[in-house]
Length: 260
Ligand code: ARG
Image (cartoon, rainbow, N blue to C red; front, side, top):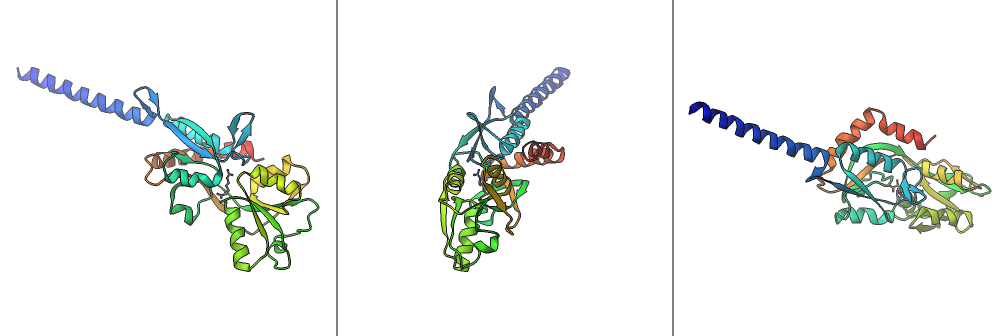
């Protein structure tokens, strides 16, 4: 009898352990009841080489890194193209699980969202028509000049130049665009004198649009990271996998594929 009870206890424990183990596997693989967890990602797909359209498909560095993380976690990635300045408010109201859109980590943004670890860096540059009278950033920071400066609404480029105009009492007009594509058109059609944009993106615009060149700026290096709603259940596991992908060289390989 004692032997039977001991056997039953052992069996119960084995079953308990087995079901506990399978639960863990489900969570790690993002597989609950056979359905994959879908991670919704918001981006502004006007930002080559990080997120942009190739035909109907959104591709780029951010898309590939997000996919690599989701693959490892057993999640499915669903991408929505939206306006850049609507992404943080949408994360605050938990409309998306992540925002990955060449997001620079800033103190102000950290009040509203959490950021993952950094996956790359960038800085702001100034793009001008090749025959522009603007020779250097000093021309832009001089009170003697009045320019129309194109930016994407809510980006660090927008925030920095708006700050400079206020702090230095400059008389420029800041032309805010929802999408970079329209900002580039403004530049090529003479409606704007220059465009402030992240380095690799500005260089991509210069490559695909004839007649533009870049001025260097002294704006500080910026850290790119993935934005999450505060208290996201996904932040820690994304960081863990992101760090692995940085360590094993996957992130660098993805960047090298897009930035020569
Ligand atoms: N790095 C800049 C920022 O965080 C610009 C990002 C713009 N991203 C985009 N996909 N349009 O403000």
